[in-house]
Image (cartoon, rainbow, N blue to C red; front, side, top):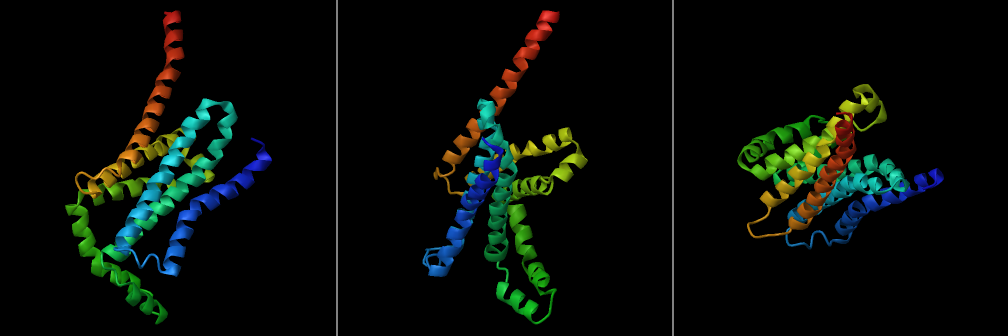
Length: 233
């Protein structure tokens, strides 16, 4: 892939990753979102689904580039796609905090307009007992929040200057947790849906294939090392 084409491809990737969000805004503006049977539930599943799908797309980049050196350029999109997965995961979390938990958004905005800058925080303190109880009572919220925290850590440490400060090996160890975040996200999905619902199966199968590919690659890399050790012995 010519280096001069990368900036143009990045624009395409940005547009593709933003398309679900733009479509959501379109649904809000033309009233389609309000016409949903349960708009909040629709928003929750929509943002959660796209967070998982984009995360899986990000995890696919490394196995693809290992097939051929000609695909090495794909790694230049890994950080960008991962940040978009965090973006949709954050939207997913915000919908829970500001819609499901009963956060009084109009009062918070009215307070800001009146110059009461602490009003949004006061409204959050009102709903905190509900969120606190949910976190301790509902396992799917616990595992989902854990997945978001992992993605947050990866997003914060994604800039090059932080990677240099951490050191390459430490940075790689931390960013391997993206697979754990993927596992947590799938578990969150399974625990969220009702018993008998198989919607998370496709995501789980894709994640399983990606994890298997990583394990097989690690074993394949060790084979030459083991052979060399045997020859020396």
